[in-house]
Amino acid sequence: MANKLQGFFGPRIPAEVPEAERWRYRLPTILLATAAILLIISIFTPYWRMTLNAPQYPKGLMVQIYVNRVEGDVAEIDGLNHYIGMRPLEEAGQVERRFAIMAISSIALLTAAAIFIHTKWAALLALPAASVPFVFLGDLYYWLRNFGLNLDPNAALSSSIEPFVPPVLGTGIIAQFSTLALPDWGLYLAFTATVLIIVGLYFHRRAYKPLVDQQ
Image (cartoon, rainbow, N blue to C red):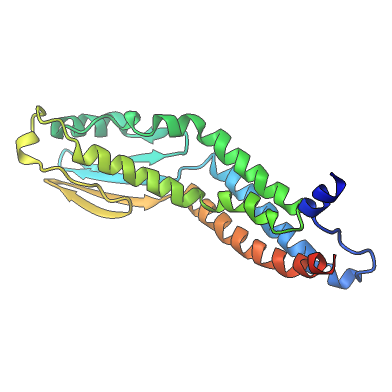
């Protein structure tokens, strides 16, 4: 049992390593810890925002999506979408929003736990966190596509609007409306965490693989 635990956690940093050379072991720790902190912070900031420009709203309407809620001019946008047969925004991703905070917090803690693992198993703990921004964008695309291609045929303007896929990022035009979709602070933080995890695992391997080989 002790050998299995040692094989999982890996060797400790040798006591005889000079202080000046210990940076190579501290660097992956700093990178992975920072990534975990950024993911936690991202929970409290919006991941995505969309501005809708309509003739009756000269200043535009904006909606922001957090991992667990939707904020902004939701009622007004739902009112416009109702005319073309699109379902209310709150109906999208209900299960994802319910578990998002718990899921992201858990994988952020796994990333922090990877600091104490000095073997290849550290990657198994940290890599799920690196996928967060891609999973978010993929899920967002799924719901935008689902809503855009399944319009209510009985809606007032159903005869003048063909099914469409709203853009996840960039500009879209639907009849007399235009939309601009952009990443927000949460998504930037999540992508930064992804980069830090990949770089951190690279330096983690450089630091600890020689010790594992020696062991």
